[in-house]
Length: 476
Ligand SMILES: [Zn+2]
Image 1 (cartoon, helix red, strand yellow):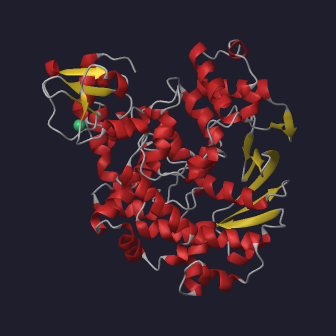
Image 2 (cartoon, rainbow, N blue to C red; image 1 turned 120 degrees about the vertical axis):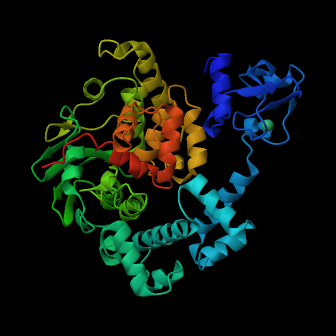
Image 3 (cartoon, rainbow, N blue to C red; image 1 turned 180 degrees about the vertical axis):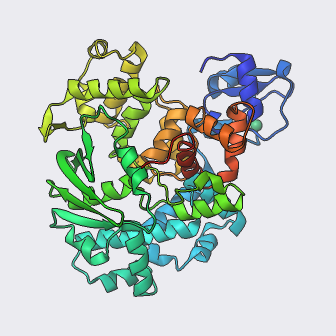
């Protein structure tokens, strides 16, 4: 970020926590320096100085603010966030140790209201939600790795009745515990869809990129090459889509991975019904009309989402599809049924910046794509770890990568990491959707977008998915 004082002063007034670490603000009248999000009274512009780092501020004789602790932030220390992350790690490690949300509140040492707020801010979920998912995930893990009877597993992970276990397991995974266990040896499986699942919208999302070399929708059959298993081996997936269930066949021995990929792809664990109720309560039923069960399709891998977030920024969609096609062509050969495997981080890390020039990548885009792939390929950026991080930690980690700004980071968090409460700020689909939804004279700017979107919290990712549909005709 260039240190343009007028622009930075405006950002400072906005007080957005996502600017923390991007610049530091010195106050000459009080002799302190702050994070952009500091809640202390804002000084006049003539009394502020901007610094790229905490050290730079300190070197001019300023002291760290006692309210916003800029040095803790610069060091990466954030005691409240760390205590919440520690608590979530405990819940995931031993969900049965927490009989319910009240036990989580008790263990946290925070009051219930404050704890709910912290979970919402850092995990985009309630404590009860985090606990339920932890139980279901732990049960799934035991079904796949042990021979214990499902009933024993249900109680061991903290469910109090078999029917509750069965219901929650099925709604989050689309199959029964017994069918989940079969994934250890299966090469095909079925995922049940919730009632009213808008299959036509899924099909439209799956066929949006008409130039794709890695997937193809033909009638009710979707075929794609994905990378599965510990070695990320290319594997063919064939999905047969119907309004009640999706049948999946795979060439891979890692059917459990294929199952996880498909449930994310169809957004099975997203709280569509809860968001639709929320929208109606706000008097905005028109936002969800005709598609109350709409989900946000997740990318087949985090790396795929990362590439797409970099390729897609600041260019139009058809050109972005073209660039992606050329990149896939340049880095991989047809794998099966005329489809290519998606490039691995290593495939792209091996390229030189000049290799992407004839493909019409701009110099900076080529640099971002290749540098990011190198971070992943040599282990400096662990994409699997992002999935288990708090939203706050994932956002900070991603914002620190050159080439990823707030739009691409939020896009990635929404589309690849499954966080429920993100807004890709500056997205034209979102701003024009808001303009129509609220009949505004002009498209909202960044600050108005934040304000308008705040009413949809904690479901802003799904709100974004609906806003993207506002100007599109309903799919046939
Ligand atoms: Zn401060």
